[in-house]
Amino acid sequence: MVKVECYSGYRVNERPVAFTINECDYTRSFKVREVIDRWFGESADYFKVIADDENIYLLKYDSRQDDWDLIFYQDPRRIKAIQPAELEVTTLSKSFLKEGRTRPSFPIH
Image (tube, rainbow, N blue to C red; front, side):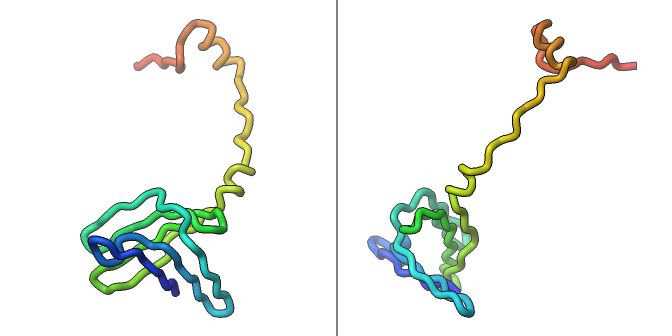
């Protein structure tokens, strides 16, 4: 369950300012540092936020049900820790690069 506190300016629940995650034995509250993206659908509004724990959360507000849900969580520190594998340049691709071609061509029979 997610409980969200919102700023209400020209409209109700204009943007989240804090939220609490309450699941079984786990309860934790967060303050929203920044709304980095938002989009509005027919039945729901979505807010991509950075919380005070430096993680990214996607919150969904269903205006018809007046209900909030946590859709997505991402720890950007873990993404930075993943290094892309080194690309191997094969002999075949080296020859194509020398000839100025970007990809091999195959005859059509």
